[in-house]
Amino acid sequence: MLKQFSILILILFSQCTTIGFHEPKVRAGISFGDNASFRVCVLREPEVSEEEVRDLFLAWNEELSLYNLKAEPVTVNMMERPGFWGTDILIYLMTNRLTKDCDRLLYLKGRTWGDLAFEVLTLGIFAGVGLKLEVQGAVEGQSNTRGYIKAKYISTIQILFTSPKSTLIHEGYHLLGCGHQLFMKECYEKIRDVKLLLTDPERDPNFFPNITTTGKKILNRNQVLTDFNKD
Ligand SMILES: [Zn+2]
Image 1 (cartoon, helix red, strand yellow):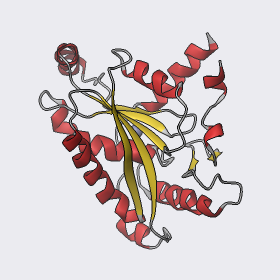
Image 2: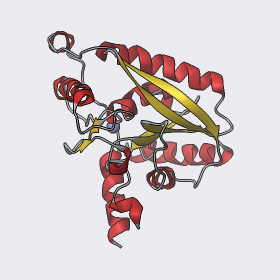
Image 3: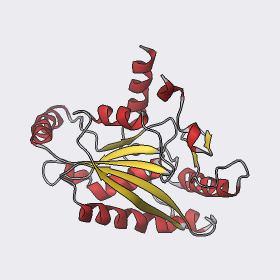
Image 4: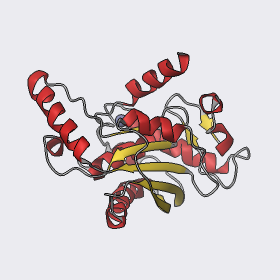
């Protein structure tokens, strides 16, 4: 029961609108240190092509270059979706350890006929009550190292608000520990602090560290395997 409740809480907090407004002057005043990269293991559904994965990473890396950072897709594995709902995907990701080649785990969700039907349904609800039920992506809050995005959508009202690239950029900030804020200053500082952890003697030298949205330092992969996963 407690487990279900904690999943619910995590998911409520994972609902995403916008990360925050950029503040170029503030950003220019922050030192992000040397170039660094982190390895992202990618799981993709069959409808998502390797070319689309490349395009998504190009867009993400353009954004990350603001912080002298680069995301490297290291392994790209195809798999069938573990369940229909975004929550099913998050739970699946959270029960998986990061392997030694992965600093982050990213799941790219495709688009099936079932998704299409659901989009039509949520479109009706959106039009009716102005509520957008469909979630474009989410990152778990335990270690901020694993998340998913909808990598493919081409029609319906969602395209007015977002795209797979902007969703990845958004969730990509969560993967670096940023939460949501009106202005980006706090997030810039978080990214700077995460990069400073690269010199922390406690860090596993083979792991790109993180600081969760609640401020917990993640310095090695064992910390990613939380009490949640141990059940
Ligand atoms: Zn978000």
